[in-house]
Image 1 (cartoon, rainbow, N blue to C red):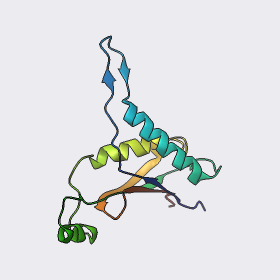
Image 2 (image 1 turned 60 degrees about the horizontal axis):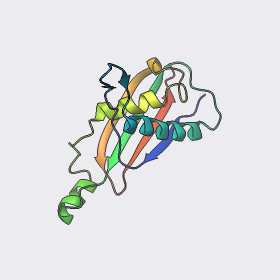
Image 3 (image 1 turned 120 degrees about the vertical axis):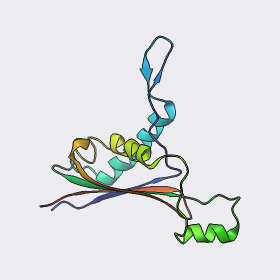
Image 4 (image 1 turned 60 degrees about the vertical axis):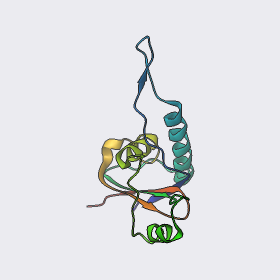
Amino acid sequence: MTHPVTFAIPGDAVAKGRPRMTRTGRAFTPARTVNAEAFVRMAAVEAMAGQPPLDGPVRLVMRAITVPAASWSQKRQAIALAGGERPTKRPDLDNQLKLITDAINGIVYRDDCQICEVRASKCYGPQAVTVVTVEAITP
């Protein structure tokens, strides 16, 4: 039986940026996306601790935790931290998820086509961090 792989990416979540075009028509990935993917890959490699990528169908759970705005009243911050308010600001959850799934491709699982189940959420917390868990789905 394979154990779940869990790792945390500290800091604000980053969304996968759209490819940009140069004036000559050459496409490139924005530097912020390249750097964020490298950081996620590093966390995934560390979590795998030399284990081979998972085979077969997998479930991916991603929780992006962000800090309430400092400009909010203490009452509103407390409500947000207690789960009474959820983040509805950018970055978009699906773009955050895309960056994660692309970055850990070939590290945690062999190919992202193995992802058969996803649960992703955004919430408020005392520290900005994204927590990712990947586990094999057994029949």
